[in-house]
Image (tube, rainbow, N blue to C red; front, side, top):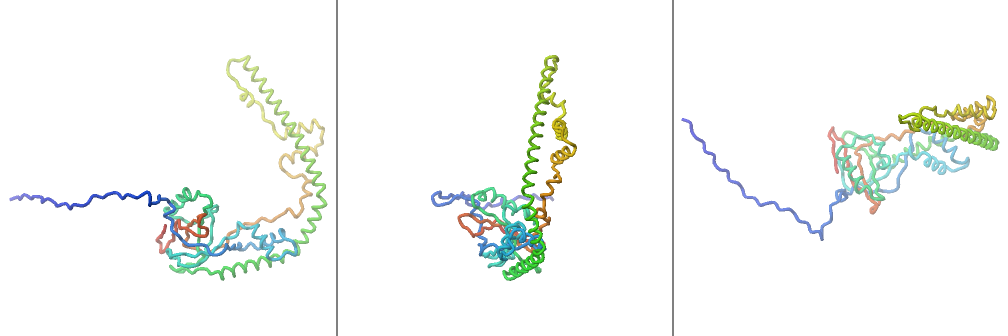
Length: 356
């Protein structure tokens, strides 16, 4: 026979109601994003600028052009740093307050990317770190004097361990590049100095002819500009008269702009042709005016371009360094040298680790 099952009532445990916490406005501080930023470390010493690699010829040429023959090596290298600062890599020593992911506590070297160069970052940044960075830049980062950096430790990854680059290793690398640049400078100096001396004499001799030529070109250009303005005024005056005549004789609307579109806009070559006809200039003069209008350099202006104006073009590449464990940090104006952690991330064994 079927049996009837009776459901037994379930005893409910009595719990206390959750009451909201009440903060005393007299003792509590308002919540800000800055309170979430933990100290990450602080700077040790001044920045170190690592020169670009495989750019010896360009750096040596800067020494030749920017310094005098008997200048000291320090003066020549200062000129190179001032000219090629964008190609140098900024390296600083940081003192980490506590271990973070694979980074040990203590001092080590990091490459520094400033906020104005964040568009050059090619690493994949986790979404949570990117969001936190954008929130900081939109909030406390708007304050005057706040600095945000992207740090990459100078190290070599061996398995899951990091072999950090020491200051001695970095100094040896810089000295090696400097030695190669100065050797290239000595090789180029004999020929380049002689060439520059000849170029300086040529430039001094052509200074007066160049001044006369520039005055002649500017005077011709002003005359052609005045003629073009006069012809443009006549074109607009004709269009205005035609539009008024049309409005008197026809009922369909016609504006000045409609009539102006029916006329051909002035062409610079045609203006020059008209100027040559009025001034009765020769074909050679006409050709010179056409070259000036097209932006080409006439043959007499080309005489003033000596070898001192010819520079070699080079592609500057940043110094290759093997790095990992990058981090975004902030330096507040009221605590200079102290770095606050915005986000630190690293991929270990295929797993992305993030600390914020």
